[in-house]
Image 1 (cartoon, each protein chain N blue to C red):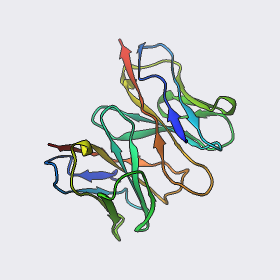
Image 2: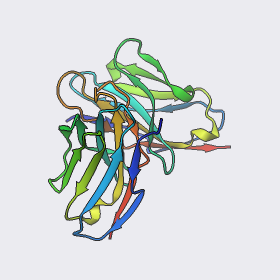
Image 3: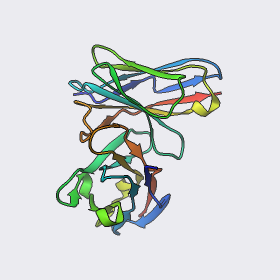
Image 4: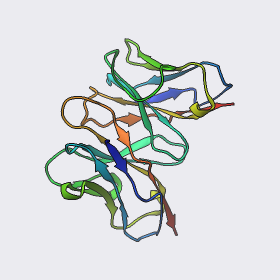
Length: 114
Length: 115
């Protein structure tokens, strides 16, 4: 089976623009989580979705939003981009979104905001 | 405040030497504990995890970790490091019980291996 896939792999935007990042979970996985990893730091939790419902949200501004589709894929949207949004955005999936479950990470989307 | 600390930013070891990466957490109750590895340009891969039971946990690639409740620690070890182990290692926790599903990561420890 394919692992978690993310698109695009790289993206360059300018301040004030909007961006949409996409994630396809492992087949059979119903939960998707999004993380932001700034250079030199550990990943920071942004959102978790399970069965199309938001289950958790990290300490990020309302410019960040996400949704999960009936096929369990997900989109992360960021509005009014700031320079500080430049980061690697990671998507992770798990079967049922339980805390004990292994989360499988995709390779990430590297976003550069100029 | 809940937190995860990895005190060592960068560690260099010789190939074949033993390795210990430190992780300390600050949570009200024992959380669920994880170690992930990230190779350059790659996503994160789970090495091992601890929920309860035996405090010595075996993982993939020859890694193990020991949970010590009294020290709020979950240190990662490997008896003999291989050059391919060079990567960044992250300790992560999620609160046990009801409530937040937020997985919180430490800042990571970068491992360099000298041939």
